[in-house]
Image (cartoon, rainbow, N blue to C red):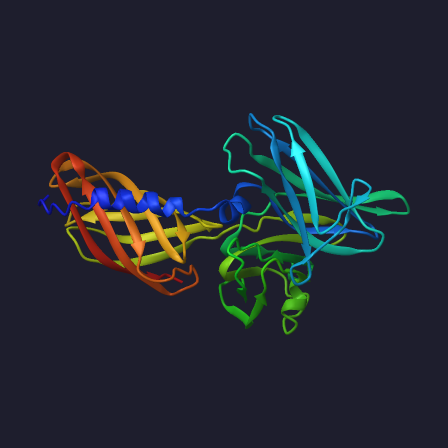
Length: 364
């Protein structure tokens, strides 16, 4: 390896510290705790939220309920109607609690928990269960995991006419979301036009898939739903035939081919997101030596993608431990067909480091 001594490492470490220093409680806590993007109450339905604090100190915070266009929602919780869409809660270390959500008439919305502090000694985990009754007898129930906010998701399905969807704009920065939906056949051919929703902050929407795509026959059958948003949203999916069953609706992967300069350059990257957090894999190569797969992780801050990586590469038959950092030079949107930026790489033991620009192209 040639020595390029750019002395960038201290600068990058300072920059990373500054970036993480910008993570406020307001922006980060929605991803620390729980989000359930669909509660149904009233009529035949009850929703039970069961949560536990597996930390070592008491979790104190508030469950916030929203519906419609981001309005505060006041369902009945454990027999008492809440006010201003807020339910203060205190859950001791190792304690488990269940909150029973009901209403006199059928309505739906979503809930997100927000802690009063940013302590790492308390974290909520939990799940949600829908109960359906008829004539006082429970006829159906289904358990649902909390949502991890995503930019892009993929939902394969077997029965187009049986899919129920619910979404909430849970973006921590309170931005309006532009959400795009596309249906694909079993062999990957797009069916019908793309649909778009604009969702204001904290807006909630629920709809059958066949209502979203009325030009596709309800009996269409098997296929795939692709969802893209320009800000993080939360969602869930159910199959409803004679009984309900839940379907996972999580972040999907995006793979990019990369053109880059530098003595050590990367050629491919696969990413997925959970709220503001980003993880993935990256392929690095030195000259004509074998390419090496490394893991990357980071976040999206003010629209920019920040990733760090590390691993072992082979150069001239010798193994070196390399680490580095990647930053985009424009707003990063996982739905974009390309993005660009600068990467930095270093092998500290031999005093080698370099930087170079890159452009990544979506492999669709």
